[in-house]
Amino acid sequence: MTVMEAIGRRFSVRKFKPYEIEDDRLERVLEAARLAPSARNLQEWRFVVVREPRMRAALAEASNGQGFVGEAPAVIVACATSTEHVMSCGLHCFPIDVSIAMAYMTLAAAEEELGTCWIGAFNADKVKELLGIPEGVIVVGLLPIGYPDAEAPSKTRLAMDEIVMPERWRD
Ligand SMILES: Cc1cc2nc3c(=O)[nH]c(=O)nc-3n(C[C@H](O)[C@H](O)[C@H](O)COP(=O)(O)O)c2cc1C
Image (cartoon, rainbow, N blue to C red; front, side, top):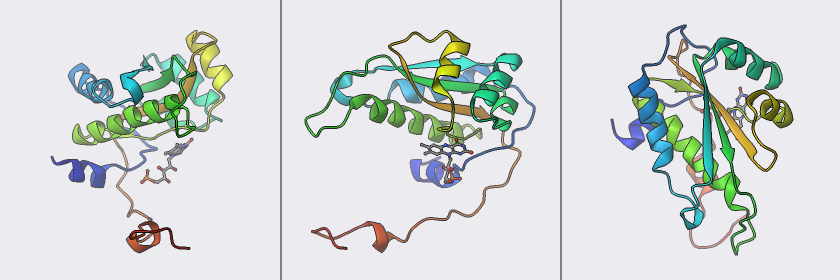
């Protein structure tokens, strides 16, 4: 599968088949995160892989009650260990670095015929408490992952000429 095919295949999966994910498939998804780029090669990402059903249910509750989070056979909780680095452009490194790794995982998952849904709506304090994540570590996002039990909807996206400007900014 090409990268473009994986990009085309990926969609937010909110219904999962009740099958476990084979360890080797999950490892390849996590390998995509491990190989992702990061500012100054900080690699400040850490991933808690939750497979235990009661903990998944608790994570769903902490995700504003989004029940499908707990129905996925695994939830990858993506965290950042160092938050102090700021690039000269003024942006913090950590949300960008961890998000790139998460995006890579969504594409690697698509290649493995697995579905994911990026979860940004969650109570970070609750997630940290549940998983014993220490104070200085930030939870950036959750990624429920499993075999999709849904068809890909057509993508609703802006047209190319609405987002790309040749040479200069244009209103
Ligand atoms: C940073 C971020 C946070 C998101 N948070 C949630 C969420 O909490 N719950 C949810 O169901 N979808 C969430 N999504 C999924 C988006 O709604 C989805 O990506 C978007 O509607 C485009 O649809 P697609 O992923 O199927 O292409 C999130 C996506 C991103 C990138």
